[in-house]
Length: 256
Image (tube, rainbow, N blue to C red; front, side, top):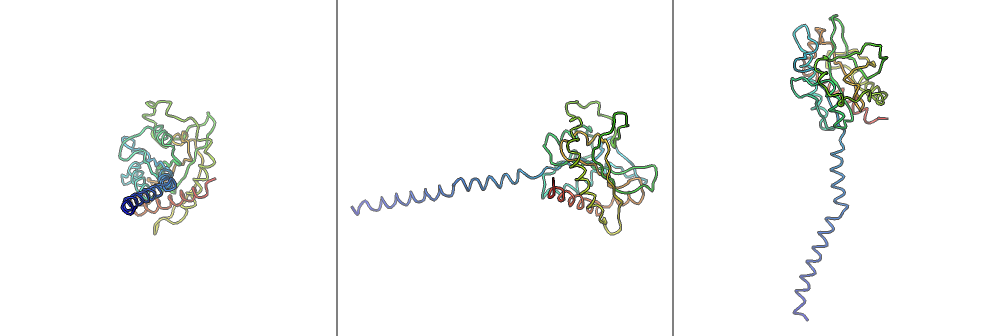
């Protein structure tokens, strides 16, 4: 009997090892890994839209700064600020034009949790200044449609890409979102820059089709010499980006 003892003991060891392996591969462990993966997948998706681009230069400052370049630079800085916490997509990543309706369509196809279109203000009055935030608000069909983008190129859009007035059901949350950003931007930007800020509703086409909370931010008047200079300062843009992120965090933490 003693001669067969060692083979039996060896087999017993093998069984114990197999049991330990099965325990390590227990569904609970797999579920924990799955939950970790789901957490990564479930990051909020934010679509940032740098206004204008390509042939559409947007407003021009007294020193020759184009709006399209400022919006692109801020979009990049903001994306870098956000991407540790959120999944961030830019509607354009370089100097080229994208149809207005396709910008919103991109956000909808991605099931984005938020859409932000970045612009600068422009005025024939060089003293005009401040940051403006817009949320979509429909007006009567007899009213003139306001738009901050060039309308060239929209005729080529497939109408199916447009979510007609879908933003209406997000209007309340979009306004709340704008208020969160406003509260953050009211704080002093940089050492010397302090902007007046305001919120208003407007029938902006770039927001109309967004099936998610959406706002448009004019980050200062590029036609104002002082603000044009500040919008070319990377430190100012970084401060603006940080404050926008704080407003975004606040919105998601207190989302209705």
